[in-house]
Image 1 (cartoon, rainbow, N blue to C red):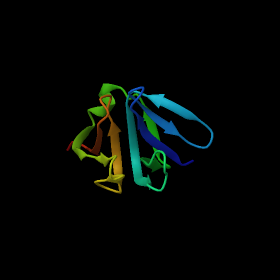
Image 2: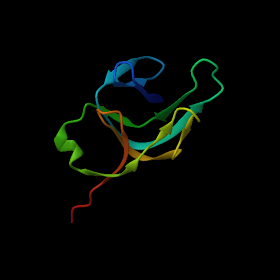
Image 3: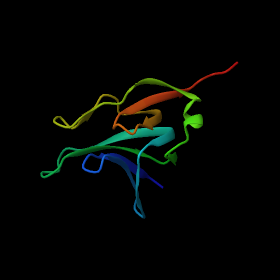
Image 4: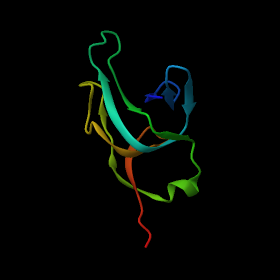
Length: 108
């Protein structure tokens, strides 16, 4: 089922919403493909969010995050309603509101 992930700055949490539920979390690990969606035509509150059909892990343990390295930040410009990247794979939504593109560390 398609889920949308976005930041609720008033509560300083991440929200995951699909047609059945809405969940809040401090941190999120998205393992798999994602794409950015923009709704600039909304008059009162234009929005951008990440959508996915992939596995979402809510408040992952620190040990799970050690398998990944941060590659770059996924940046959202609220004024222009624009993301620096429109699709990719694997994201970490941090407690401080930052979203990182991550990749699995190869241990050989």
